[in-house]
Image 1 (cartoon, rainbow, N blue to C red):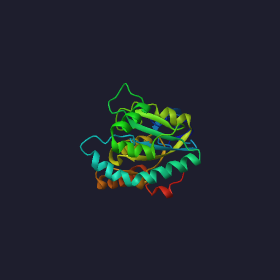
Image 2: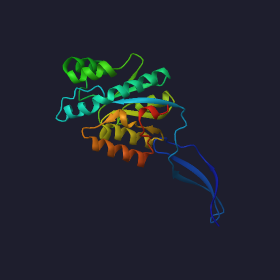
Image 3: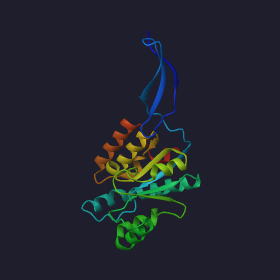
Image 4: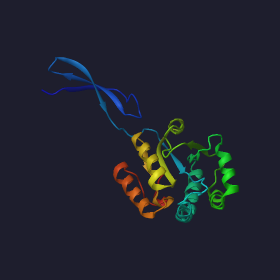
Length: 223
């Protein structure tokens, strides 16, 4: 005779998806608790648009190649952001702090606009607006040691549209962490890139396969 499920709790810790189930065990003739891991999808109703590392001075070895690949996508991402704003969808800039621990986001924007021609080109077309949110991150994932999850919970976000650079690093790590937290994921393929286009394509295919990410072009992404 098999054990019978009598009740199940809500997940105790949403980031780990652990819940307690009460079962009837015929071998002992009574009920007993059983802890199981689950991965439920978020019940939060809202979407949010993430722009990963678009405030960037491209002042590193592969910077020029990355800028060349990203430049044609800036118009797509700008239009996607405009659509999000019209629909009152939160726009969140998730940006590396580049080791500048005494700098805030506005300071980075101003610094890079003044010191990098490539950064100024991007910021003039895709810079933050006063109503936008921002998160400074110390590493690749936007969730690692940042308040991003708290912000998303406050905004009741269950669907993340993740864009920016680079597809195979910060976008990939952030999307994976979002998936592990039960969030639905969209990564429009024409709004993200990498130093090597092949690496970006492989990362998108990986996210589609392992995280059920919607990687269609931005015009087909639903908020």
